[in-house]
Length: 273
Image 1: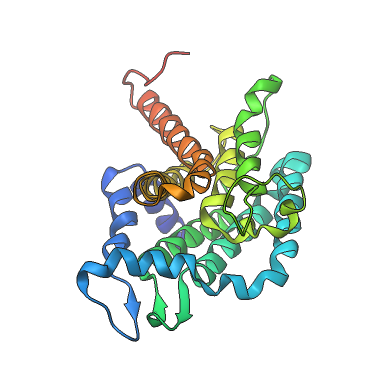
Image 2: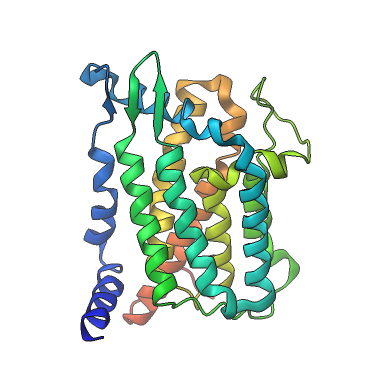
């Protein structure tokens, strides 16, 4: 019990230190693996290929299951609050574990067996933090009365979760069937806004370490996609638009955590209330 308490206290304390957040991003420096090899200058191209040709597509039959499951757990949080905290944490950990495997492994003619180790390790770190939250929950999920407009994080996140993207043209397509078939629940950039929205709406009664780390990783991934879809391959502009919820909610999450931390240390808040 003493060791468990020590580990919990260390994670909570470290989670508020800038160096801990940098450690979380350290795996992004790991190059990808490809059984057929590649030149060092192809590092970025290999990672991009893996993510866009991942084995996730082979599990399309499971997409509706996870889409529905995500919505069920989301509804449970808002209906029963704290009683669903542990289960929500376990589900988030499971989803990030699956993302680490399905989104970051590719098998094809170009590179053979290829693995985006950087993202895989990063997602597993997130899975570990969410599992820690499930074991030693700090998410109280006690909602204060809010005006309708204050639920904008949830509405924004649901756009990503819907992922209204035509798979053939990669342009806008608002077919409601994508809510069940998009596979967004197993895509980091599309489902993370939903997890962030939940934590943001219940803030400050949430695990701030999980919120800060999720927000930081989301910010890095979102920023990378902005460059990819609007600068490198502007033909994918709509995919870039669908990453705005991730970028916006990640920044908002980091501001909330920073603001609350500054308040507790006696310094001026980032924003006045």
